[in-house]
Image (tube, rainbow, N blue to C red; front, top):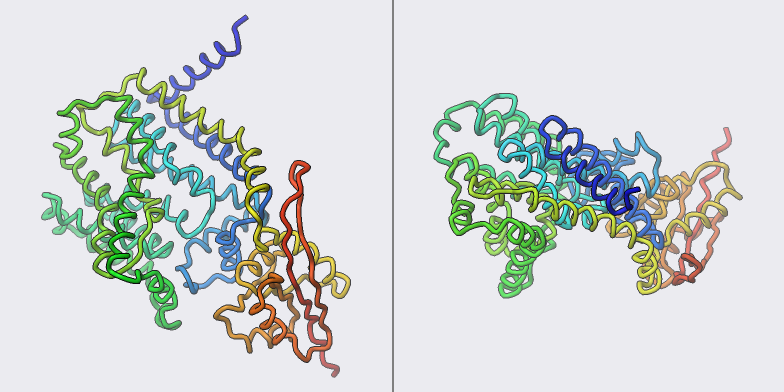
Length: 510
């Protein structure tokens, strides 16, 4: 009887055969990405057991309850995706973990489809494994937010643009324009993508053919059409998202230079492991490295230019505008990296090179799943919780007291921005923040329909605002609670919160 090791080795070789077989590769990649997404969803679920949903995610949930053409911090597309997802799946931590990992798997699939146009089957598998070693395609994107939503949008936009540039067909031009518009509706950082594609188109020797065709003008027209409702919203609301973005400016020239240098170094740091792995396993010759730097084929050269500009272009813009940029924002910019590293015909990917990379990537992914309970326990024992991280416990206390006074659901949660958003998520209700809100309108709404106000017990400003809202109202319940949760038999940290129940106004008698 074969040993377990031999069985595992045989199964791995069969899997590798399927990934390399052009007839079976598509199905094998899909199943691989489904498994990859499921493993990372399980990791996220286990590793975050000590804590509640991240504030970025609960914020999206709050926006998704009242869809608009824009919000105070970001344009609306991430909220639209959350709304669509939570229409199909229940509102829970797990469903939003699955949204994040589905988003990652979809992006990797799009990247693989783009690779297929430039690389042989063995190189596409090698490239896919390289992407799985970049933290943007596992750890970091496990939190679905306005950064993560750009992952598939940028990958799709680049794919459509490359097709439109090469073929100049209306369908691909319209798709590239629409996807670029949606990317801008995901986050304004996508201006980097739009500028990159424009500069790349102008720099390419085939620009004459491209700009004499209808393709670029169709791209621009469709993109503006997609953006039009949001642009109208911006004018109507006095550009609040611009004010939020402008608040990230650097304090001085020296700080701006340091931050920008940190952006460039950090961006390279995120891809250090796949870079080292590819050079160690493939051992490219000097001629191959020269060909990588300046590809002989114009299509591959266009890909290299786009990849370089996506990372480098923000640096001079940040220095000119005095803006702070962070390497985290390069999250959606790396899907072309395997083509840049592997497309040269002087680069050869043998099975002996492919085997350790695929095996190492798979073992790393499984090892992180095995480590998830330890990660959860480390968080539980070493990282004191914030009030918002125990919001589900607060929501339980609120609901218990609310139901003794009303059979209706809690209509609104207001208070400290993050605690209110997380509590509203677990109560499945609307949320409002004290910060920057219209307190007179909030007070009127709370008195009319009822509300719950929540504050950390240590936040005197939040408590003072809540007392102002509840002043003079007869049906008020104020409670202070201490909340803690154990994990694997170990006691956790404790938070103190205060909440107020405001009963809805009694209907007037006829």
